[in-house]
Length: 363
Image (tube, rainbow, N blue to C red; front, side, top):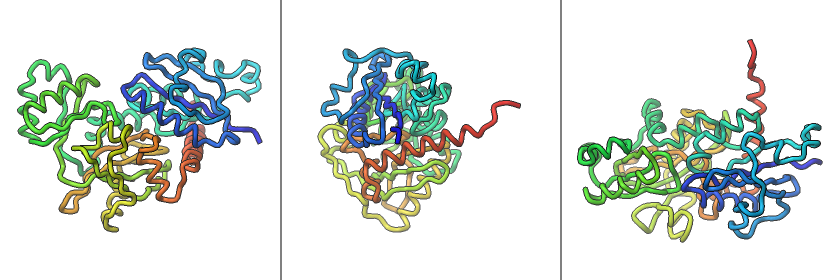
C-alpha cells in the first residue's frame, strides 16, 4: 500500500510563528509514518518558503524545524514540481495527496495560503478561504455573527489612523459603550498575542498602543463576568462537537504565557455544566461553524454568564495542537485520540476537495 504524500506547512510570517513550530512538532510526533510520507515545508519569518528532506522520525527540538540552513528555497506556486523530481511528476505519482497548513495568524490562517492551494488545486486540511479570512478578522467575524443573531459581548473597533487622529475620542467611546474592565485585541491575530485587559483610562491607552503594534485594526470587547468555556467542532457539512472544557486562569486572563509556556492555567475537561448549557453551547457552536462556511475544524470559545446566558466569544479556525492546547484535549476526552484526530482531519480535507471537483467550471 502506497503511503499518502503529506506536506506540512508551518512557521509563517506572523507573530504566532513560534506557536506554529510547536504545533508542527506535536503533529509530526502524532503522525503514523508507516501511512504518511511527510514532507516539511517551512515558511520563514520573512515569508520565504523552504523545503526539507522527507521526515522518517519525530522531531525532538523545534529548532530543527527551522530549515533556513538545511533546506532548499522553493516557490509557493511550484509546490509539487519543486518538492518532487520531475520524472515522478510526469507519472503523476509525485504530487501531494494533501497539504496540512499548521499556520497560525496572518499570512497562513487568514485565507492567504488557502487561496494559493485552491489555485494550485491541491487538497488541504482545514478551513477554506472565506471561513479562514472571516474567522481571522475578529471584527468581520463578530459582524457576521451579529447578523446571524448569535449573542456575543458588546464591542467597538478602531483603525490605527482614527486613533492617531483623536485618541481621546476613542477612549471616551470605549468608556461610554463598554466601560471597565474591557479587553483590547489586535483584530487579526490569535494565541492571545497583543491582548491586554484595561481597568482604567491609563491602562486603556497602553492597551491600544500594544494592540496597534500587531495590527492596523483593533477590537475592544466588554469584560464579561462569567466562566470561560470552549468546545471543539469537527466535520464538513455535518459537524460534530466534543465535550466542553472550562478555562480557569490563575492570572487575570488566559494569556500567551499561560497557553504555551508555563501551563499555569487550570483546565477542567469535561466542564461542570448542565445538560441544557451543553446543548445550547453545541447548538451555537454549530451555528457559528456554518455561518462562515467552516470545514474541517474549529474551536469555539464562549462565556457562561451567572444568569445562565451563553455568549459567543470567538472561533479559531486553526487552533493550536501543542501539549497545552484545548482542541486535541477536548477530543481526547470525547474518545478521539490524537493520532486518530489527525487522520480524521486529513480525511475531511480530502473529502472536501473531492466534493469541490464536482463543480462545473464551463458553461
